[in-house]
Every structure is written in C-alpha cells, then in structure tokens.
Length: 605
Image (cartoon, rainbow, N blue to C red; front, side, top):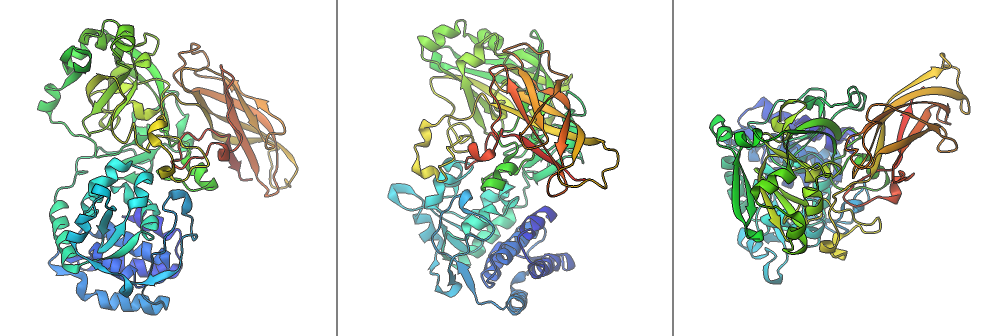
C-alpha cells in the first residue's frame, strides 16, 4: 500500500500528496468505507494535474481491497471532489488526445496533451464494450474504474505480450489486475491509459463490476506467499519481485537462498504434503512418436546426482540505467537481480535418454525435433534448443536442491530447470512437464514481446514482425561494483575537483554461454586510463563451461570530478574477447533487456 502511494508521489506536488493522503486515511478512520476504483476515476477526472489524478487512482487501488461495502463512498464523493477542485483550482478535465502508446513515449510530463472535459466523453454500456473485443477486425476496448479505453494500438506493445492483454478484451480489467498486481507497482500503466480513454462506462455496469470484485477479492491468490528476507529490495510484492542490495551481493560466492533475487510473474504455487508425495514429472514425446513418460519425484531423486554451480540473472537486470536514457517497461532493477548457487539434481540429457530420446542427433536432424519445452505449475512455458538441452557439455539440470538444501518455494520447489549460461527466464521454476517439439514453446515468455530485444530505433513493436525476432537465450557479458573505499589520502575533506585519490573497489563479472571471464578493467577517469582487476573466486572455471560469476578486486587511481565526487566504471572481457559497451544508449531497447554497458558508480566524498 505504502509503496504504491510512494511511486505515484514521486512526480506529485505537496498539494497532490495532501489530497491523496486525505483519501487514503478516510477508510482507516471508518473501516466500513470502500473507495471504489470507479469513484476514484470520477474524482481523478475532476482535477487538472495528471500527477494528482494518478495519485488518487493509486490511493484507491491500494485500499479498495481492505473494506466491506456496507457503507459506500458515494456520500463522501461530492465533499472530497469539491475540496480537490477548490485546492487545485481546475476544471473537470481528462487528457484523451491521441499519442504514442509506448513506454518510451512516457516521461514525467511529455504526455500532457490538450485535455477534454469529462462531460464531453460518450457513455458506453458493458454490451458495447464487449462487442469491441478485437475479433473480426473490431477494435480492442476495455474498462477500468468506470472509464472505457481503446487499447488497440497498445496491444503489440504490452510488456506481457498480446496473449495476456487480450484475455481482457471487451471486458473489465479489474479481475485480471487482481492477479497481475505488478500493474500497481509503477505509474506507467496509468500514464499510458490516460491517453487511451474514449468514454465512460455506464454507472450501473461499473457497479456490477464493483460487486463482482467484492466476491473476487474474497479469494486472495497471494495468501500463501513465502516469508522473505527483510534486506531484499522489493519492487513489487504481489507478485514478488525483489533484489539483493549491492553491498550484500558479493558477501559470499554462493548466494544464500534468502538473499537470492526473486522474479515472479504469478503467485508462488503451494503444494500440500500429499501433493508433494505424489508429484510427478511428465515427459511428452508424442511429437517424436514415443508417447508419454512419467517419473515420480522420489524416483528422480534416486537417480545419479549432478551438482552445477551456475549464475542466474534476470534479463532486466540494470533496467533502471536504461530508464535514465529513455523509459522502458518492466521492473526497475538495479544490479541485484543476479545470484549464484550450487544446484543439485539430475542431468536433463540423462532424463531424456531414460524417457526414450536415445539419439539426440537423429531426433533433431531426422525427426525435426529442434526444441525442448518446459512447462510450469503456474502456467508459464519456455524452451531451449535441443543442442543445448541434450549436449553432455551443456550441463542442463533438473534441480531439486539449492546450496545443498531442498529448493525453496520462491526458487522452484519441488523441481526447476537449470540452463547454465542462459537468460534466467529459460530456467523454468515449478517444473511439471518437459516436451520435445519441432517448434519453440508457445506463449508470451517465449514468443511474445516479454523477452525479445528490439533494436534501439524501434519503440513501437507493432511496426516490426515480432515472430521473426529471437527471444533471449544465451546472454552477453556483465559486471558490477559492490564495494568502494578511498584508501589515499586518508583525509578527503580538502579534496577539490581534479585531485587524485586511490580507491579500492570490488565486484563481480559474468558471461553467458560458459565463456570464462579473462579480465575486468576499472576506470576512475571515464576511460582515459584503466586498472586491471585481480580475479578472485570463480577465476579457475573451465573454458566453455564457466557457468558462474567471477569475483574481482582492484586498486585504481581516480580523479575527483567537478561535482566533488569520484566516479568509477567497470567493464569485463570474456575468453571470446567480447567487451562491455561504454554507454547503455548503444543497446537500449523498449523492454529494457540485457543492459551490459559499463557499470558506473559514484562515491560521494
């Protein structure tokens, strides 16, 4: 609740905060008050400030699930609306002018187009909205909070893929956002939607939606979430998306499971003791003519065990740096969406042989089975090429242990896939089925926009043939700085711009595809000169199978900047002599994936 208010408040004025705070406190004063989203929309439309409108909407979303409906908020609405109008001195306005409905088109104020009065907007019934469901050439309409939106042009740019957003075509969004609550973790959805408004929903139809939501909210899909470490930096808690703070990231070579970053799209599956005891992993080889094969969890654990130390990194790690160049969509990760663990389980190649794939080369080149698909309990599906999946040197694992302990629920209990050197999204958690197929997995995580890196020039996915662009699989190379300390001079109070200081720093580096890190360079003068770091833990991994990160330390002479601070940057080099690019503008993409530009950090003196 507090996070939602904070996010909206970042772009608001103190007066905006006062209005939203008053709205937020009312239900706390009277526990029977329920501020419906439709009421919020009508109030939000009464003020001119776009940030105030978003703050009011955020307030209503935050506490709308708290209270019963025995006392409606309608009786309070005229008073609060009048107060807002008096405070802001505005007319009833809502910006509806057409604009670019892509994340990169959204900045703090560049979408404040000419407003249209709320009274001028047409009224639509639920039946009229339902007719516009995208079928047979019809546009795609949706409703939320009493407003009607035409999202037709946005569908191709939906970060979750068109398949997900089209589930709500012709319907109200509220039930879907009750599950996909990441929409509340950022102001981006409401900023985009402000410019898709085409009308208002008939009040009795919105009342019906509100009544439906009272029933829906009785069942909380996030009621059985695991307990998380308090030190994690939480970006959204339903679903949970959290990263380790930088200063804890390299405290140990193997990341403690409690500090391992968490990236979820859905609630964490919960299994009863009976369901765990009866858990089976299914192999679907029907496309290969071998039928179905099942392995019980306990039988799988009795097979020869393999242990692999492998690093996993969210594809959006360091997205926040991309956003400093141009806005993207997705969680605003720092550098902490990465971690390394010792995974224990059974090699995927051994299991596939047990299931009936005796000759991977025949399966691919003769039978045309080019992909291995993974299906999860939460409905997610992803795939990798058969060459990686079944290679004896690919080290793909069906894991049931993490750092010598059973997998935690947040990290895939009871089974997950480990695909070393690949984007973490291919390391599917809560694994329930493995499928041999001629084509890659279906769904937004493999074929949709979610994990596709578009060119920097493309800000609208509808302008390209998305199906021809590959999803992320093997990843590039990266580095980060986690600790910085000035060692000379000991007294920094008299330092001025241009002075030299000696700095000790340390961090991590990692390359995908098993490519070993051979060098890390650190600069304290924006690349004019470089110090070569000493490689530490992880430096002795095998060439071609270096699946885990490498720690490093360095002592570098840095120049005090004009701002009186020291600015450091790191870049890593792998054994193919790939090197990180200098600026994130070189690799910027609308989804904010794969930022591997120099890692930069400022040390305040």
